[in-house]
Image 1 (cartoon, rainbow, N blue to C red):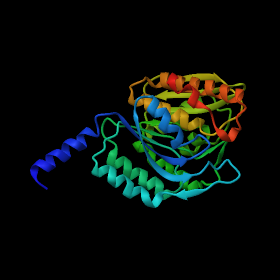
Image 2 (cartoon, rainbow, N blue to C red):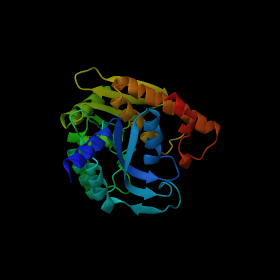
Image 3 (cartoon, one colour):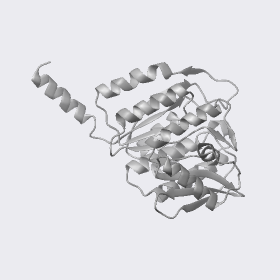
Image 4 (cartoon, rainbow, N blue to C red):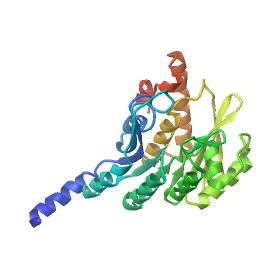
Length: 287
């Protein structure tokens, strides 16, 4: 290649990085409003380009009686090799559900390759709920999820996942001092900002917001209807986009919680099945 062509190629590669970008590593679900299908519009509404790296592809999520599924693991390395050739640089990286130890290893390599000094990495350690691992997760796989913590700047576990990652006995009624100890333990492993989300307190849902060196904050929203698919993906997508845009962490958590509460109320008004997720499309302009 001539020097002139090399110079042109370098200018083109650099131009790819003139806009803020977040790489999102998660599965893609065609129906049911979760995972990448949620992150793409949410992050885009925040005026950031969303670059998806799929881990698997579903016709609709696993909460339905049947679904089509294909594993994308064997393609992930070649996929990110092409991003390296383009010299893509990311302001943020968001990881969601990872279905195998191999995928966790691929995400670690992705972090090593693409996480720059100013890249904000948000890890949503999707592993379980209500004190139990999801059926697709083993204790060994959950342990390996912990190997992503040193790469994380922000961690968004629910209480079950926070307990698993710290070896804490799960109790639904853990109070603030215990939550603080859990966050301190997680912080020592890497992430300096942590939100333990979706704490059920009677008719309310609480989020415990921790930042290293600051007093923790407990944020509350009234609980609206049953749990729905994709709410965690909406939450982590807003958190990741806000972090890239420089929004203070407690303000971001408050905004994400309030947004989800409004959308849940609308889902009830429309009488949507729980499997259909939340109708966030009607509220995107509010972001």
